[in-house]
Image 1 (spheres, one colour):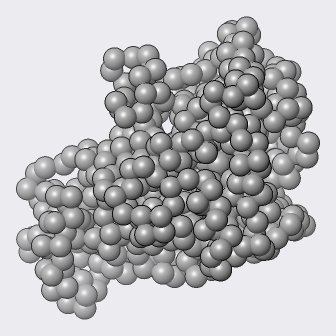
Image 2: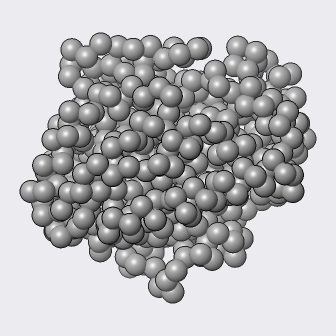
Length: 561
């Protein structure tokens, strides 16, 4: 709340402020605009160097990113709303920098967060639904509070698959009632996957430095893979979910989405840690968290045993179309691992995937958790609740009765199923399914598979890295691997989907999956792979914003701001 008050106090100064610091700073800016980083690919290190050397300010960054959002958001629908206090917060952080105070490497850097992560400011947190428009929990989520403490600027909220994809089976990935259909930037009608759709698209084309997403079953790793960026799905419990709108505490995770492994590691350094309000974080096994940025060093794959999971398609009745595009590149990448000093252990099989495909135990548990935890972990914390939504029944009723929710064109089939099952944590149905789920995590989980074969990580196409890691609550990281050829045909999505689930220039990634709390090792391996392949910048978006820092800095310096 202190930032909010200060933002209001200083907001009147922003309209007339043209140069933040001294004349000498202005001269340095004027002589260096040709060296300003381009925002499509800029890294944190590049942005912080420019801020340190006075080439631009955090206000310049905020204005550039807001302009970029305005140029493409009508078509891509990646961003739901902009923080009305973003420039004022940037002003405060610029003043702190001028006075020699830097909170962290994220100081003065704009970040976007998914619309299910609560912020106590002038923005909404709605999971893409009008049901929570105007509702407020009265405090920041833990992850938002950590970002602010580190000096990051929460620039806005990103669109998402409504209710993280669990409203309906006929809602396309990336669609929400509030935000419409998010579209990726790499080919016409590009479906971005979900549910962290807007976060992935925004990070991919520089609508902010980076973004935050969430995952229950490949909701972060999948969109990162499909949008040519890096995504880290942490171990369940490494990052707090306090005041993140829940699906299931047993499976939910909050993680970074960025254009490079190192930038994602910078975010994870800030986000990770214990929180008394999320008891899963008590499982963190170390007293002092490792530095994930320090793991980004050459040689991270040297001497590592990497298991190639071969039966990943067993987890679904229909193979993921974007994964089919990547299979040839995936096979070639195995040779790259060997060249980087890794020992490749081929034909690893995870029998738990077959069990997952045969029984809905996973979703029975999620349905139960959704019913219980929407209230216990979010609705009951609301200080304002204009539509009086306090249960899954209330939520379904609102969706079905509110024209803007586009019901029945997009139905409530998952809500209906969850309510018809009527599982509770004390029911025999829940206990049986949860026991089976725990067996898949423990007796048959990723960690056991890794120990049995003396592996350091599993290696597989990214979508299946997300799905496989979700069964065990394990960490996963996706790194860009390539894109489909320009002559690749389009394939339209199912049901009400107006997007294309594959097409020409469709990005795809590759995933590393580890045992619980092995993020430091996974990041080291992913960084080494990224530095060897350097794929991301060879895949260019079909749509990209025009505004660069130079467009903001030059007019300000010459009195045309």
